Image: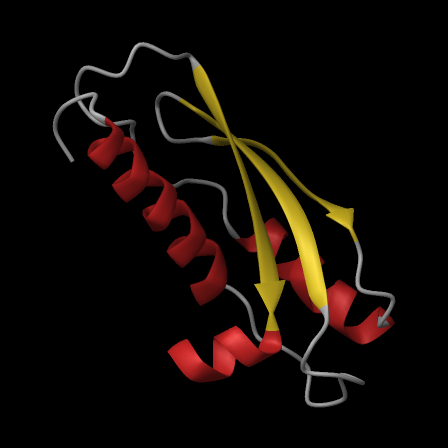
Length: 104
């Protein structure tokens, strides 16, 4: 992902989301497919995860726990694209069972 353009940033952001979604195994016992879990992930320029946590839970204990496990599983994403000047980046995204089922 060379360069410091918005396209490179968007590609890196997608890589972050993909890595975390791949680490997620939703529970069979979730009470709804419509629940969203809002998370915040902070990554250092070298690709190490500084922090990852839920900022808005779904209210479904098993679903929220499955997302916490996914957040704990990922400790490295990969270095920022060449030319990036930030020392860290923050990413906000949602976990959603319906999206997971549609996208694998």
